[in-house]
Length: 178
View 1 (tube, helix red, strand yellow):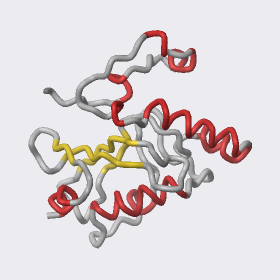
View 2: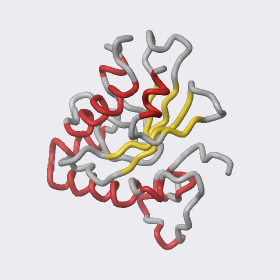
View 3: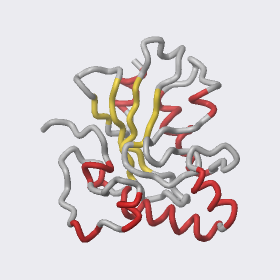
């Protein structure tokens, strides 16, 4: 019922393996935030004990945020990880919890130490990096099921330094078969 409610809302929901326990949701950055205009594919996995146990939530395309692991996309959010209640539903996750996370990052409880450190030391540079990530990774073409073409010339030293070469295939895990 909860998944159907999400599907009937304004969110684009893409089931995985024709089930309702695992799916991707198109999520837009909240208005009047550094993430406004960004579009992310968020992976949701519901445990068997859902709604008594919280869903697993993760960003599939990159996002620069102190409370989101840059490589895995895992989200550090108390209300999902520790204080989940069966009274919450998936609409709460996408309409309240994730927008609040993006609007009010918590650098004192980071999953991305670099983002947290930069946010505390140099707010302007942090904001610029968030905007760069939004421009580069959080566009609708980055979340489509079909790979987009990206030239090798767009690969920067930063992308190669961590052992990953950035392309649409690497940035969005779990492409669906056409």
